[in-house]
Length: 514
Ligand SMILES: [Fe+2]
Image (cartoon, rainbow, N blue to C red; front, side):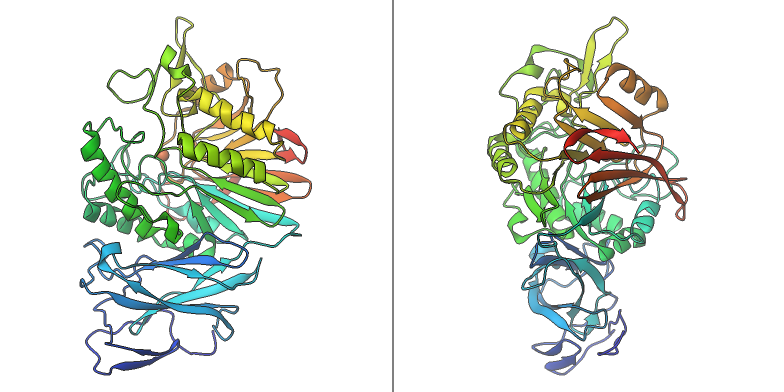
């Protein structure tokens, strides 16, 4: 550190009298803001990296589990982005008004940055200066390598975030989060820590749930180390919900009120673009990011617009016998608007690699019952086979170069080859798929993954016994995926080891063991 000679965390108890404050950021006019405790309890984050911009995030929350503990008045928060960790060469700066309406969260878009380089950023509210975060803009064309991690499913009670502790030490360009950032409910056994309260349904309760999860130092370290992209799955709202349907909240009108609260709390706690701010129960979070000419990343939302689960009689959309409804052509996973958008983005994809970042396993995972009948898990793509086929058709039609699908949700590692028709295993592989396991959430037992492998020739690998994440390393010749697994999720300092490595060669879809 050099230049301003200030501690990374500083806050003042009591009040200040002056109307203008000298600060490392310059002079700010107006009433001074004071905090009785550190307002940066939830850390800092960045996201949505473009060639010339990045989103910066923090939230003022001196008492994080009491809806932040801020007075209702708005607070002006300054931000700075610098080319050096000491903030001598400031590249961009600005002021954002943090309001109680958005839980005093800050979403600042830093523009005018240079492509493919590391920047450091920090915030100041009153005299309280935030920890320093590090971020990286998207590279310009001509980049020769891109490395990112993908993660999902981080039930707070079931384990520690040692996976993030490990991830934060890596040399990565990006982290992609594929959903279940929070869990609305307690489940599983051998909890190492507690939610402490029940299932949230109000905005205040969802805010407190995010605050609990984001108080974790290892999660904060991974946010502060890299820019993130994120999409949600079901547990950010309620288990297995589909559009306006929830098996836990049967009245759609009441459910949409809960969804509105949940979406708003998600927005308030993630480094999302301003365009993702919810309007009532609606929020547009699907997006297309380019990383030079190496990678196009299509981040999709398969929860908000999907058709109601098929073949389910009133209860939870679990693994049930097949029925005619499942294969109706009109069934949609993305909704008509997003599906059309997706088709246009695939047509427009220019990267050597195109990643479809979505929530769950896209490959078919047929279950055989004792009588030889087929059963499908109706909450995943198997409940929407024609929507899956349309997406894969779109990849074929537009001759998308090196398509790779990444997913989460299943709490297991998978590698798979994707076919337009999974009943015809000799058909050409259209795309390759990798699913990361969960950061902490309990996974399926070995019997379940063994039978999935036995019944589905396109599944090449399945392992639900380990928690962790995945890293993807892209260059001009290949895409290498490493499954990074924790020794023990119940140990906050657990070691991480490479469980398996797969390679996709440029021009040849399909996963090969490295
Ligand atoms: Fe999950």
